[in-house]
Length: 260
Image (cartoon, rainbow, N blue to C red; front, side, top):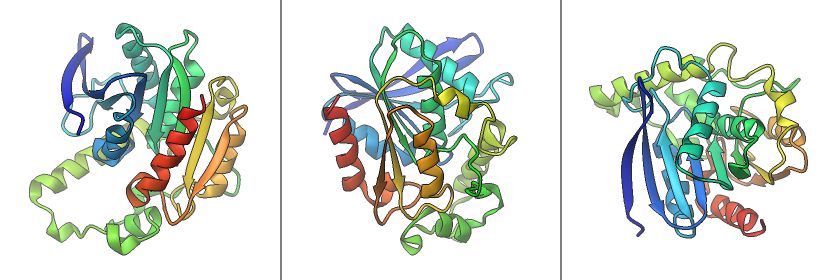
């Protein structure tokens, strides 16, 4: 197994970013969604087998500090582009899940310095699509989260009664942070769809066929907004195909990156 190191980077005087790093070769920035880094650890571990996986914890998640001025995905995208530049990286492959997919797309759209070289959006959000509304995640109870997020809801349902007080508090804190970044307007930026047309790097949009948070129809519209983007379905998977169908998800990512 590839060893992992953790660093704390001083991005701004009042902001530090925790970054886990493993593997060597082409850099791959793996960006998590509302569920936190654990939802994409498998992706990072997989790509570390052939590249240099970089997995940041977004400020405000898992007990990390978030300065009061950092309140939206677009600003976070700019911060991560600064991080890539400061680290001397270029041609970075971006892989983002859920809100992380939105973040990765923002980075690719805003990059004018050749810092990014490829984009993989896994069940991302960030735009509005007529007749394909994003499910109100904040209104769901634990059973609803499982039902709408997963193909196999019973397998991934987590009974809140079985969680410790610390685990409950951590989940509440993460959801509070998610509301700050993406609660108003809900899970989108009205200007993002227009910016997606500026993306020039090769793009794969990967979607779980059973996603009921953001449906495959939403995913197709997301892909259609990015010039030349490829859209692929992962069968028997919902909003987090990397957890339900890791082999199929990783195979699609591998094939895409190998073809660049």
